[in-house]
Amino acid sequence: MSLRRLGRVAGIFIGVLLVGFVGLWIFLYRADATSSAPRGFGSERQIYASLILRAMRLVDMNPPVPAGVVERLGVEFKRVGERRLLLDIHSPSNSVGKVPALIFIHGGAWRTGRRQDYRVYTTYFATRGYVAATIDYRLFPEGKVDEQLSDCQAAVGWVRANAETLGVDPERIVVVGGSAGGHLSLLVGYTAAQAEAKAASGWRDPHRVAAVVDLYGPTDLTAPEANDVSVVKDLMGGTLASAPERWRRASPLFLVGSNTPPTLIFQGSIDRIVLAKQSDVLADKLKATGVRYDYERLEGWPHTMDATRPMNAFCRQRIEQFLQSVLK
Image (tube, rainbow, N blue to C red):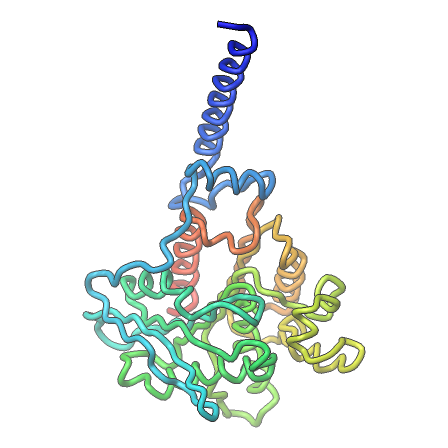
């Protein structure tokens, strides 16, 4: 065997060993998601490597309907002209009494995404005794922030109006969303709470919710890292300078008050799309105002971290713990 060929074989052998070592290291690096938050990564490249080497896998976005769960797909909850907004519902088949309802709002930079993206959550939570729905809303350019908020509020109103048929406790409705959906979930919960605070004593907003779960959603659109981003300016229909008060009304941070609903926040420390400071300032504001909140600031995790199996399992577990605490 020539020295050149021997060197090539040795190089391949060393490469295989290196890849195997990296895969083993990444595998051992993971934490048990059932007991604590999965350990993060030093960079997004490490995450991509773990996925390529199958040391970590993505969730199944289209899981089958579990035993004991009833599925209803494509239920209309709002119509705008000829546009029908639909929701999918998964419910426990053997629930006793009125149960809490979860309304999931998908992400996608306010312009993409589908309600089916959260089927992985709705099917799971139905097995845990919740009625879980995932909804449409008008995406940009069909809908800007006001229209999108109105659509999400309509879903809350529809669930409350149909609570008897659904077997839902109308006072235990929770909104859950990720990224743009996290932003809209916060707006739904915080706008209703602020409206009640400003209204006459005893008035109840039909869009009120018992709690909010925010997965890495923007909280302050007026901040430097958000106000000059093209998708944000498109959503707002102009610049911050042109309508500063409108931008503040669309920023959940400025809607926090003493009656703001309990909030659970998930945020990855290496998120480059929604910077961690967006969740940090919201947590600080909730704490200063005396609002009940839980903050999972997850070191070494990026945006859409719950698309991975270990983090999705952890998020489901923490959401359930939070709900059990605040929905007594």
